[in-house]
Length: 113
Length: 109
Image (cartoon, rainbow over all chains, first blue to last red; front, side):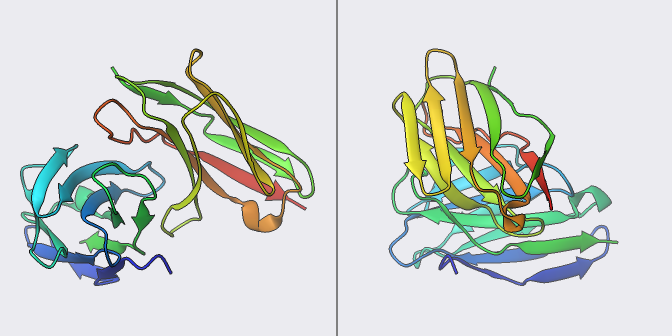
């Protein structure tokens, strides 16, 4: 158990819908990272927040957005969902702004039908 | 641009030794990570190298040559549970991890 929690574990929804994925970092960690991993593909970095502020952006679509709240939990919002958005979405956290000792949550498996 | 190159798949025998290579090109360099990922599960940290040389940790060792943009992960005394993907991830000058596609390691009895 990494100490990073993600909810829900599984999510099935239809094309065109909007969903919200939630992540709680390890206690004391200020950085939260979001990743997308499609079937048999590598990890795609989406976005990083550090202490409530957006710190870095990767290959995140305009239909996707995220935020980190004052209690440091984070949410990833995916809208106008397409079949190709079906993937595992991982959240990770680290103490510092740099990803030393980055711990991953168990992931949310999103299926868009 | 930034680029990571790892073999897509490797096969090895239980009890043997395997070396997974990674070559990289990044904008600046602040060390390199190796992660293990079992199918459908989250990646877990294996090693971090920032200086040239070999770092040994039990059955796993990781090597780095910064001048060559090269790293390898060495796994000894292979066990069936080592069947997984191994991800090489150098950190660039902005402290961002650049993720390779990973090497799928298959262990046969």
